[in-house]
Length: 79
Image 1 (tube, rainbow, N blue to C red):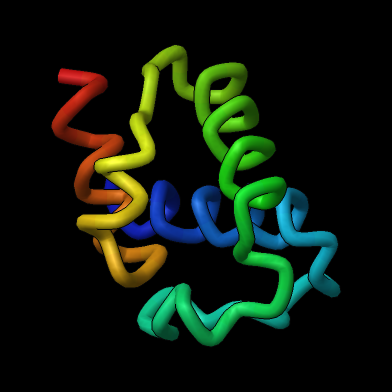
Image 2 (image 1 turned 90 degrees about the vertical axis):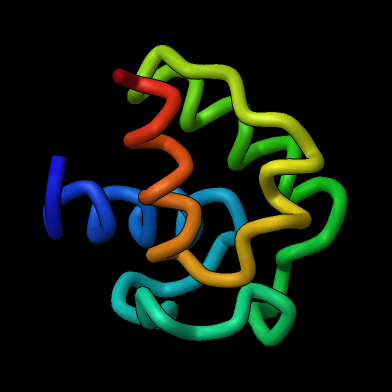
């Protein structure tokens, strides 16, 4: 997983936060994303589990401030 993973994570973030396609940049602070609240986070964790077969925690979400950072964490968990 390389840049494709980052884009896949962005797509999942957009789905989880009900954002329009292309609305979230891979380096954008997740704190600035509308819909990145507890419901969006729970939905994102579920979508990541379905897509990548890994289990993110709330701590992972707190520690990763961008989609790129989340993609890196997911790569660590997949290996």
